[in-house]
Amino acid sequence: MSQLDDDRLFPVEGRSRDLARTLYGSVKDLPIVSPHGHTDPRWYAENEPFPDPAQLFVTPDHYVFRMLFSQGVSLDDLGVPRADGARAEIDGRKIWRLFAEHYYLFRGTPSRLWLDHSFEHVFGLTDRFGPESADAFYDHISDCLGRPEFRPRALFERFGIEVIATTESPLDDLRWHRMIRESGWGGRVVTAYRPDPVVDPEFEGFAENVARFGEMAGTDATTWDGYLEAHRNRRAYFKEFGATSSDHGHATARTECLPRSEAVALFEKALKGTCTAEEADAFRGHMLTEMARMSLDDGLVLQIHPGSRRNHSAPMMAQYGRDKGFDIPGRTDYVTALKPLLDEVGTDPRLSVILFTLDETVYARELAPLAGVYPSLKLGPAWWFHDSAEGMHRFREMTTETAGFYNTVGFNDDTRAFCSIPARHDVARRVDCAFLSTLVNTGRLAEDEAFDVAQELAYRLVKKAYRL
Image (cartoon, rainbow, N blue to C red; front, side, top):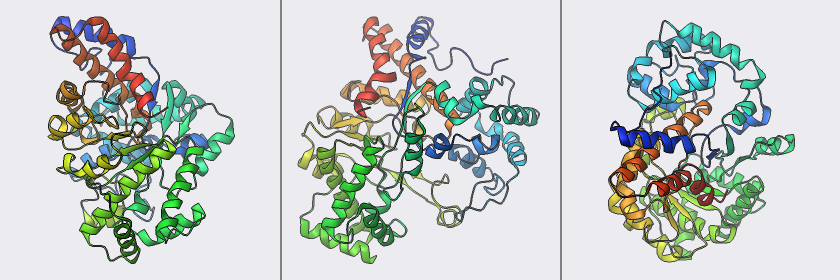
């Protein structure tokens, strides 16, 4: 028996539910455009089978293991690699059984919806997952993973993915993207330029990163002019492998437009490792403006993902490294923070900036009014801790009244968990159709317009916003 209600996430009231169901039927099979994410390009390059169910569903997914860790389950016991790459537990079945024992922790969460969707729609498993069914699930998924139709490229095509963007550091040689391109496979996998290791003075090994950055770009990046030229060169290289965007995960949305002498002085302090926290933030802010200027020339869309207090636990950072579930949202200012960049280039129609937030209090107060007037600004979808059905609905409620639909960019899944991609897009399409049906049945939108907007939100807006 299916664990998924066919009418999940639709309104309870009958008339709105009927329309939401019909709207959803018009978009549910549209191709998936995934313009920002963290799947591994090596999967598509080598097209090798996924190792086992635990390494497919548990160890790469911080949504999963952070919940388990919060209830006392060790990351070592879940097979999560330590900072040196070593894994304390390598027995996939043991990891899977531990996961199953604690599956009840996900009741009511988006992760539960994504996982149940993946079990049923990717692997055909309709029983309830838990300790009693753990081995049966493990054996069935393992058997599937050994078949050609469950290899990464086959799943990519089965999921209906039209294009997917991975996210790489400018220190990445993009070897896997080159291999994909040279393989002759028709799947479209592009990269995105994520320069945090060489624009954040507080990033570990910043000076060494900059030196290597210059070597890869063929310039002396330890000089200010050479450093900026290195960015231009690497951005051009990334564009050769399909990049249409850059991505910036700063702690704040702060931007600066500093005089050249001040920017050079900060850069030199950053290389020496003598920046204060305030100076490091100012340098990051100035580099956002520099990236915006470069976007005017090369056309890359500028994504700003601020507000995450990354790697909040120093001990866990030391033991396991980055991206292990300890990134915590914080209050974020946009109106004051973005003003230097917007004063410099914000009304230039060549510039496209997509703003994200982990601070929902700014949706109606700051983000929607900004995007509702500046031609360079668009709003990214509900992100990370808010990519739940409730979070997506709150986003639409608080932004549509001021920014409308066309100053938003559709949906992106932002995931490392490959099998969750169709599940996440399905949730977004259901939530948007539910929202549109309510607008129609409260007299705020014509029904034919709702069908058009549903297509925009599911497919067209994201292609346009990300220049895909």
